[in-house]
Length: 194
Image (cartoon, rainbow, N blue to C red; front, side, top):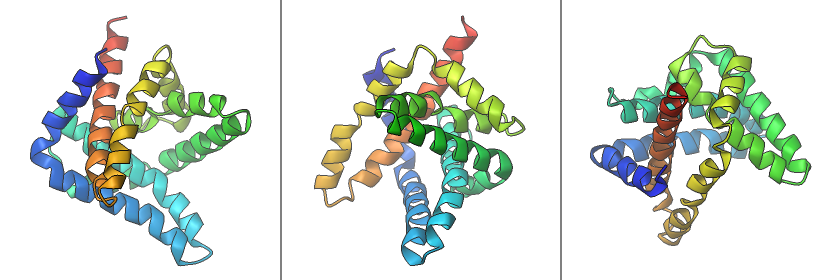
């Protein structure tokens, strides 16, 4: 797959929606980061919000990629399959942490393997968390290096965004998320043709 072409396509899709997408990403970032700063229970609140809001981001960007209606409220769609998303988020976090303890590389492999879980839940909200994790692992099988390469291509853009008084990062985050949603769609199509 031509990853640069995918990144260009994501920018074109995002072009008429930059302001809305930046707003959604900004609210996501604030909602996940702020509670941890407020009090001793804030970290638990952040943990409980992170999974559903991450799923909400996937709803938003997958709708964008599919050409469906996008609205700010999609950010909160992740609270509907609450049990599934909380269990998925907890398992992904725990397995990634265990992998990181085992010399970092296994943690990266685990994170990449489960990175499509939320998109799978968006496509099938009734799926169990075990099946979502399993499908993500199968979907990324043989594609983890390519997915890692895709994510690494955004690092210079994030660094450039930081140099622009951090404001530029909020333009890169929607672009990155749109590209990942496109990549998920491509993985699904490739799996169908196998």
